[in-house]
Length: 468
Image 1 (tube, one colour):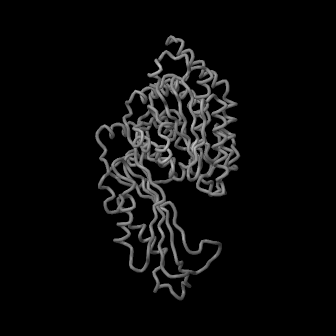
Image 2 (tube, rainbow, N blue to C red; image 1 turned 45 degrees about the horizontal axis):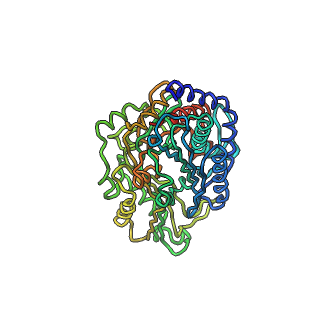
Image 3 (cartoon, rainbow, N blue to C red; image 1 turned 135 degrees about the vertical axis):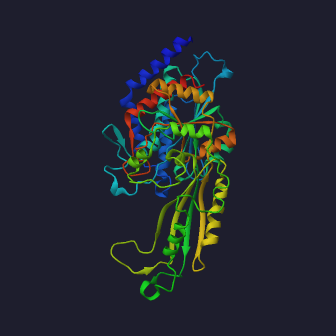
């Protein structure tokens, strides 16, 4: 096939995708209707149903092999598509691209804050509202539909494999073992991972770094049972008060984390990183607008972009205990609980995170209470070279669609698979996606910008025609 024919072929595939927009959106709606909440055992059957639905579509769309790989909890969907036969590249030079995604979603709570039912996809003002619409079923379906279209139009320039998991929203506890056990199925030249998103609909993005994650349950115990606050207040240390005192001491006044050893292995931000961060058009005013706060908080020596992508954090995700129902009940609770998470940066190890927090508690917890700390999940940070041939090819595809080169930046979120693939298979990842900063992922009224999603499908078709 001559180069001109290849361009015409990819352009033709993009036109075919544009003509099928209504059909593609209907398929996305089918998937988001499935309440695949991975953390809730009551939705285990729905998670399995979502996996089977995707596997069935991949089989219909031309995959040469499709498998559901069982794990200790939720299955991994694997599929392979052969490169189109009309490519001029010698067989040994055709790259293999692994596409990663997850089909599980976050819980919908608080349900009363949703404007429409979270599992009834609703179009409004150019967006599709539903839990999982943005994170990340739209991103998964963009890849599935791009591969489908490229296969049908004969423009697929790579062997494409899919790795779609159902446990990302619970920390991917079984993914690394699955990759290791089935390494030959997942091995590829590069992973295309559309789970990070864009800053703005006009600014295509490639992320070259992710923060790692460590997640904990902390329980503080005091009396053997709930006590009358009139009879025991002032003589028994309230576990809720003790917990709040401990949490309050976990940060200093300048917003840095006060756990011993926490910053010992943090990789400094070098000059090249600072230049890239400075080029990201995301200022304090943008953070305020998206978050709804009037003032920012955190390490003042770093810009918001640097704090989000390149600095570690400790966050309190939830605190509870005692009486929280209607009216009043005067008790000193026997227990108090907190959920805590850390976002970690390169050279910090999530295996060390328990020691940071436990060391703080051993020093600062008063003798009036007992505490128990459990690490629920952990994953490594990830960073790569954004100038690889695969990244350059993807950047070119984005520029063709959006009319401007993509923003290169690090992302504050955690996608454990990127580190796992690098560690286990030596595979770099292209981190991207077509979710937007105002999609309200993990929150009520999550949505996906529909036109941006269509553009994403086109960019993926163009990339898969010449993936590097």
